[in-house]
Amino acid sequence: MTTKKVTIIFFSKTGNIKKMAEAIGAGLKNESEKSNHIDVNITDIDKVQTETLVSSNCIIAGAPIHYGKLATPMENFLKESFLNSEVHRGKIGSCFTSYGVDIEGSEIAILTMVQIFLEHGMLVPGFGDGPLGQFVAGALDEQVLANCNDFGKNIADLTKRLKTSQQ
Image (cartoon, rainbow, N blue to C red; front, side, top):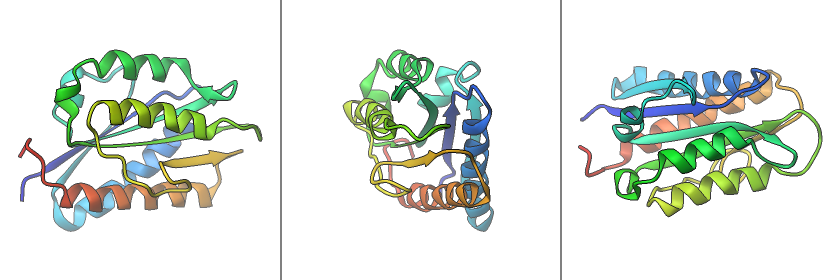
């Protein structure tokens, strides 16, 4: 079996999204240890290389909600980085977000990322706290991080089963 590459990209202003990315990555790595077929890369959007995204079989994006919508730095990053739709066709695209106060907006933020993924031919699985990704309200706690870990395990399982033209 060919090793699959999963890249988690994130924008984190307070550190919550980074913690979620690390918990998702831990779930991915835990599943990968069972089969040694997944390479996991976790990186801030300021440090990610275009080639990393191009060579990935799965891209997971995470960013906070600002004023009821996806944080502008992540939205801009995705729009600029996903200009060539053919490069990402058939890959898995998934996402997660959090917000520190009880406001609406998680669905809009998730849908913004999902729309970009779908426009580029990516496959978006429906698991996590919502139908399109992992969202969180309020402060992170052990249960939220455990849910993120499970989310990573689910993505790992799906990624291992995906047959792509990149193999």
